[in-house]
Amino acid sequence: MPEITEEPVVEQQDFPEEITEIIVEEDEEPVEMLQQGFEDFEKHLQLKVDSSKQPEPYDVLHISRLVSLEKYFEAKQQGKKIQNRPFSQSGKQVKSSVKIAIVIDDMGASPSRSNEISAIKAPLTSSFVTFASRLNHQVEKAKKSGHEIMIHVPMQPKSDIFVSDDVLTVKMSATQISDAFEKMLKKFKDAVGVNNHMGSELTEHSDKLIPVMKLLAKNKMFFLDSKTTPNSQGEATAKKYGAPSVHRDVFLDNNNDLEYILGQLEKTEKIAQKEGYAIAIGHPKTQTVRALKVWIKTLKDKNIRLVPLSEIVYAELAPE
Ligand SMILES: [Zn+2]
Image (tube, protein in one colour):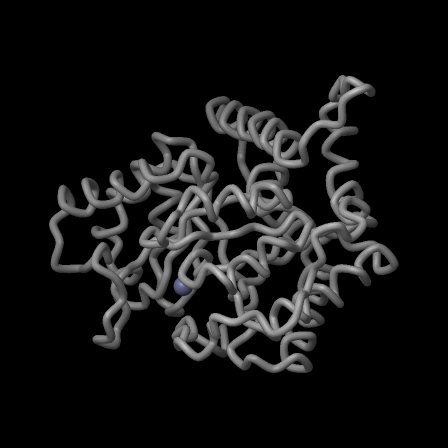
């Protein structure tokens, strides 16, 4: 029962080109937050880190993802049941530390706004639009801060607003969708998964999602259903065609208002505490950047870990 079913349309005024305040200074103590987020990765992997050389956060993240991805597909191959919400479903006590993934959609649409998100050194998940200018350059900035990278795939909404030239529509044949989606995948070399930009119409059509899910499975990538319609066939279709999938729990910033966004983050925490993890989607808006900066600092005391989305997708294995 999501109370908001359509992704908020990002208006141009949400992206003033001049930066009015510096949210994260470049030389701000970088890595405390990041270390915290990655500590467990290293432990989990027993990475033999050369102590004379600090690994780049993104490399640690990338290695960790590959390991959990292998584990995931191995378990699947052995016919083990993969369960994404083992805590709530089994009724067991939630682990002492719960996980939250924050996915920032629409990255790359406005370089200046996106830069403010990319400057936040924390394990956020940045989902870049396929039509961003200087895409690789923008992606590199987010990676430098330790963000995980996703592709924000434009899909047809119910309203007839212009989405993008490369939008996937219900009028396209399976082959056309497959070709168009493959082109998008080729633009990115480090993306771990995709989620839908808009898509309240297309995601209701399972047959149009099949080519997408097949290519995701082939490329060992996952699908995050943004849930822009309560009737989305995203997760069901992904499951059927072998692509790991999860869905958004909370939209953070339908109002570009600090108090509202902090409230949505609190709502996300409550879901995580109940279910073991939660997934929220935000956008590169002024107040979202501010809210995240404030909120991230509070996590340690709350025993909540901000994690890249793939950690939620692949780590929660619950073999039968
Ligand atoms: Zn979007």
